[in-house]
Length: 417
Ligand code: MG
Image (cartoon, rainbow, N blue to C red; front, side, top):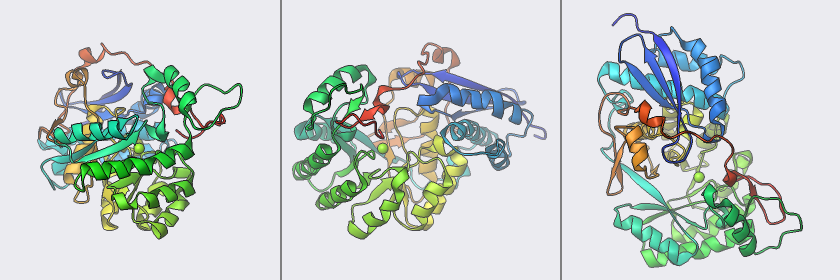
């Protein structure tokens, strides 16, 4: 094939699971040859769509889709100011689609293009939650019975109270105000309230309970979600040391990464960070200084497969493993991209997994499957996944800002969610 150009780029917005997703379809001059990418920044879907429709699409029409690296580099600097979640997600939608096209051209799955299989199934962890220790224990046991060997354990979701379920947010507000251990002043603003200190105190008891009840073999993870002060997080990591966590996630916010040095000097609890990263200067120094054990970037938010593969290889050189972010606000196309990276990375650590409902599977034929705690790709060329665009139209997006990001501490201060 000599001439091959990008003929059109479409942005598809759909919400089959109730979460707004952004999928990009790059069509080529070759009939039926197209690629799909995930550009889901669920809290800013229309901004990402505009970044693609108004800027990347005119820039890329007519270019050779086989020149992935050149396109990534030139598109990344095309606005001079670069990075950030909106532009990176827009670029990711293009980048993943180009890898999908290249795989179809080669008649190989993307993981073959990234170096081939390091493993045949991808070990997963699921989220286990409950209002108290017993409920969390039951939730972990249910996952173990399904075959999962890793579980991330939260008690009352992030920050220890409330929920990310936006349908419940009003009742949560009332409930969390009631159960918080600190009183709030008059005229408190609406939001998702949590008490950082009460939360931190509750977690040692949770893991003491879980380790004693569940034994030494289940791998346990906990996500601090940057909800406590850095020194409180150091104290929590020390308290959790006897319970041998697989890792402690996001103990500090990206704005406080300097504190990771203190973690290294104080504790052996493994640390995972990175789901909020959008810039190479966030991950480069902490990997090179071996201040983390797992890098868990959100692949679309760092710009797609091209930069993520570089992060994985860079991490490998320093003994850091991957744990790509895998929440519900990733399309199955993005989930497949995670798994192609997982499959081809020797320093893969673990993959976060969110169950897909039937609507998602219908909209995205070829989505990865799960069996006994492992995810499997279908080994078709490219990313191995398609989209039923007519079916996608049945699930309109909502847009807007979710309530769970509006976190507040008991005195009413708006804080990082
Ligand atoms: Mg997290």
